[in-house]
Image: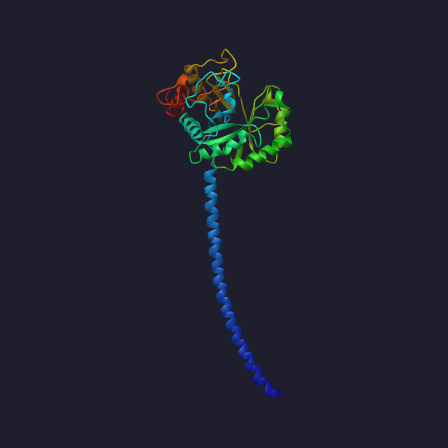
Length: 342
C-alpha cells in the first residue's frame, strides 16, 4: 500500500511544486510592479513637496531691510465723525478721495498704489481686537495686496488704550491675540515676516515701563513673533528686550531710535484744536526724508498715511494736490526714495 502511494505522492508534490513556482513567479512580477509604482509615487511626492516648499518660501519672502512703511488706519467712515457733532468731517483737510469707506476695495487698491508710489513696502494697520470692525476689514487689505509685492503688519492698539479705557492686556490676552493674528492673517503671503516670524508693531502709553516689556516677553515666549514695541523713557535698560523699537510721536518732524527705527512726520493738527502741533512744511519734510535715508535704520517709518483726525496724513488732499495726482508729500517721498533725486 505504501509503495503504491509514493508515485501518487510524487505526482501530487510535482503538481504542487509547479503551482508554487508559478505562484512565486506571479508574486515576483507583482512585487516588481508594485515596487516600481511605490518608487514612482515616492519620487513624485518628494518632487511635489519640494515644489510646494519652494513656492511657499517665495510667497513668504521677507522684505529686505531697510523696510519702509506707513502707519495706516482702516477705520473710516466711523471716524469721519457725525454731522450732529461738528466738526464734520473730523479733519481740517479735504482728502481727494472724499469721505471714503475703508471697506471699499477700490479705495484700498488706490491706497496701496499710492504707498508703493511713495517707495513704501509695508502698511502698519491699526488693530483693536478680535471681532472688531477693524479686524473684519483686514482680509480686504490682504486681498488687495495680493500680487503687488506690498506687505501689511498689525499695529496692536490695546496696549496704548490702557489709559482711560481699561487695564493693560495680560500676558494671556496678548498670547491669545498673537495666536489669533497668526492663524487668521500672518499665514497670508502679503503679511510681513522677518526670518519667517510675523511682524507685530505695538502701540503704548505714557505710563509704560519695563513691566510692559516683561508682559510681552512672557506672552510671546512660545509663539516667537517679531515684536516691535513703542519706546518709553529708559527702555534700553530693561532686562527683557523685544526684537525692535519704534516711536509714534508725530508732533516732532523726525525721531531716531538708533539701530532700530527712524520715523518722520508731515504735520500734526488735530481736528478739535485751533493750532497745529506741527505745521506742514514740504521743505522740512523733504529734509526729514533725507535724514531718514541717511540713518540706515532697519525700519524707516512715516506717521501717517491717513490719520485724518490728527491731521498727520500724507495721503493726497485738496490742500496739497499735485500734477502727479498723488499730492505733494507722496511726491517728495517718491522723488527721494524711488527716483533717488537729491
